[in-house]
Image (cartoon, rainbow, N blue to C red; front, side, top):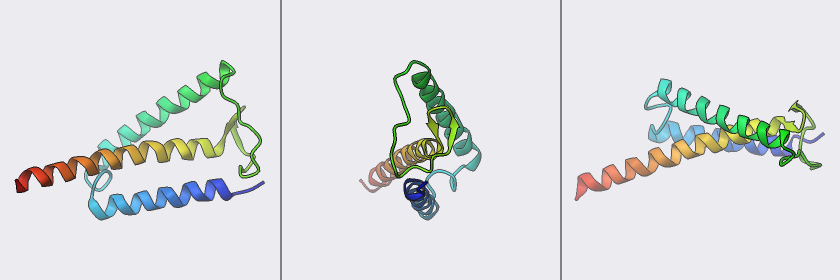
Length: 108
């Protein structure tokens, strides 16, 4: 049982939270809206994974970097944190790009 991949995901998530807090992009701009959007994205991608697992398209694999904890058959714990990171990263990137474009537009 290894915690390496999960630790990397948690460190990455922490860095994303710091970036979000520093520039007030997502949760520090509107926490209620951010929570709803993040939850919807997470539910969508977990449902996508569950459907893929049920159809035999996705499988857990045998990486030595996983904890071995499964939330459901063939669905490792790390997948939930990866999907959370993916959705949060997307929100931060979109909000950051929008802020940069707004800033650029107001200068010109």
